[in-house]
Length: 198
Image 1 (spheres, rainbow, N blue to C red):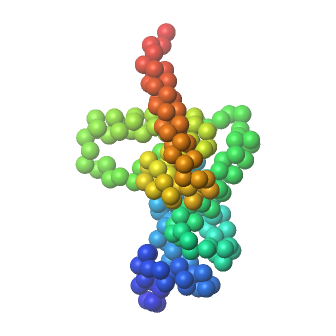
Image 2 (spheres, rainbow, N blue to C red):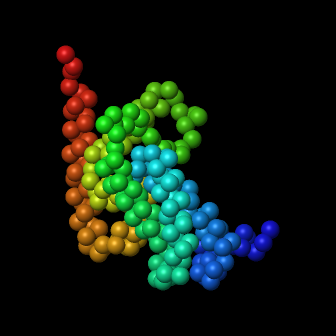
Image 3 (tube, rainbow, N blue to C red):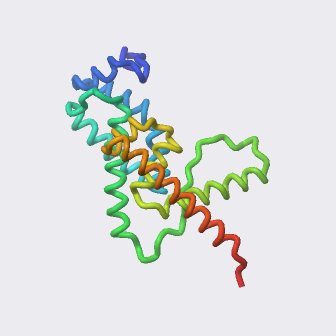
């Protein structure tokens, strides 16, 4: 085992070595951030295939632009910014090129262990997940991204501002509007589901 593999994910020397061109250190940083970032992109893009594609593109961009990392934010925040910019661009391209048949499958990612849940609670939880994902899918990209970063990934306002490239006051106002819109959409969906079919 080399000394890079022994470094913790938060070790500052890991970032220093990566910025100095050490590919092993860069790979270690990617390993440290990959799972959380993949889960976040799955929620944003609704597809593990699209998320993986965006993630790989982001990793390549990060590797080729590592010298532009100014170290005035966390590496994970910088990586989030690249990944979300990539995902937003890809999502807009996919919207323009979407098939007339649309999408038949909703991709829901949840990394919780559900082996010990009752069948009833699993069904309820799955219905709640589907409702949240359906509502998220109806939001614009700005609202969708900020809700995922704050409510699901638990990023601080300062990190969100850095990831999305917006002032912190804009984060607060956009998050408030996104929460309001999310509530509206959830209520609309619940009402639609509750309506009797004839």
